[in-house]
Image 1 (spheres, each protein chain N blue to C red):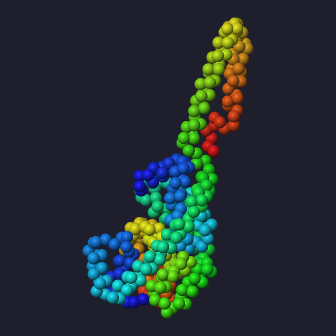
Image 2: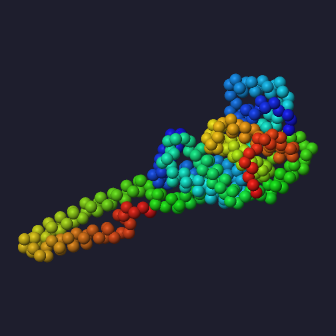
Image 3: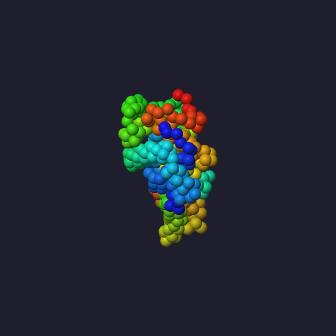
Length: 155
Length: 195
């Protein structure tokens, strides 16, 4: 390589995009005009940097979105429980709240039906209350046994 | 960090898959280019490193998200992982790269401009692989990851002047390798990676 004065040292790393109009750059540019050796080294370095940038662009273009998605998929898998989304969590809370309302409502309905039939707690003190609870449970179980439906356990 | 990226990071940290997908797709290309030219010969290795980079980044996102550019941080993690990998396995230079470099060097009568015009990725990769680690890191961060000097300095953990110096000597040595001229200024080399 041609001998250089060292003035290109500050310029080489910067290259086209970063070249500004500050005093240092102006001084270096002026030096390139006056020093053929540095000017040649600068031109050669520019070509090399262009080659690097072209190579970088080729690599970027060759990166397929499918490969990126594959990587993202693996990351999701590795993240495990962390990958539950907040909206998903909210969606899971809604049926739990619904079940919380449905069970007391079922019990009240049973009580009213029992009242119409003349079955009251005072008339049948020993079995009335357990029967009402069992009836409420029977109504609630079909909802509660659906696997994971009301669980807060993260996927 | 750009506002939309900050938002994406916050969502990803909370577990939002779509946000994570966007972040991965956004940074996959630059990370891949960086790692391939830093010295990972196989795409599958690169994908593994990118996965590990994101996993580490997401695991410690809370500590970092307001302090700087996500891209800079990802590059730093990726380079550290790649450096560890290279230490374990030694240099990996593909035979095709060595042949491409040898083919270029054989044409010693060609003007430098013609030689550089004929450069392909394999020859560049092989030449880059022969640079000292610190110079190679500075060069790929600057020209493959397109980071400004101050961000390269942040990733490398050294002053901007040192980064400029490394890039200067790296370019000089790289040109020497690609045109088979003996590279001068060897005093500027540092931290040669052993095979």
